[in-house]
Image 1 (cartoon, helix red, strand yellow):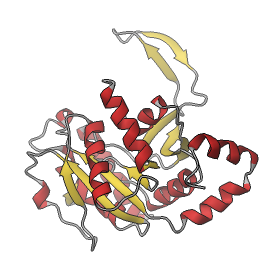
Image 2: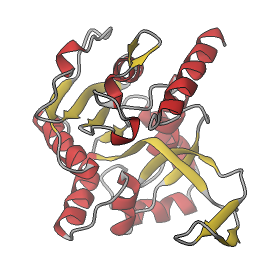
Image 3: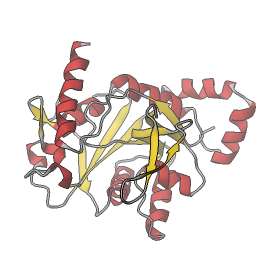
Length: 261
């Protein structure tokens, strides 16, 4: 089933729902690879170090993220894309018996992801194997959400994106921030990470976007540009991305609540 073109798989899935259940069973034996782009410097945090290295509950942000992914039994290997000038990675400590590998990141997120995908190929990852891309600064990702993404994305011909439906009223504004109209929130989602796709297909889509001078903001956008539309998979709202100092405070509350719950 995994060798069929995505268009044929999609048609079969529509006609034969049982194939979805069969694929979910098959996915229980499939290894997953993971890419973590972490070459950014986090200008909005206004700190002396990149935000992935800031303290969160006594540990670095990225240490929380890595522990939650490296310890997952389905994830075979993790590659972290870092700035060549990164001066903090050597201080990162892992609790996983299999530490992640590193590779050089690029000028943009999609460059870093592409470099990491190529590095995974050198580690033995095949083009038809699945890869999850996760933000280094989303340290509150829950194990149950990763499990759900693997089940749902693995039973889809393209892949899946973790997120939550939009619940607030959406407004469109002009450049002066004056409201112009209200946008229906029906069928709108907040896209999070991880985002999970076939390694070969994702690499090809990212390389095409780069060649065409398009700076995609996430992996799903790269796939959309080549006509491959992933499934949204609902996760928990506390899978926040640390971008501002306020986010760091909220992330601490989320981690402590998860530990107590």
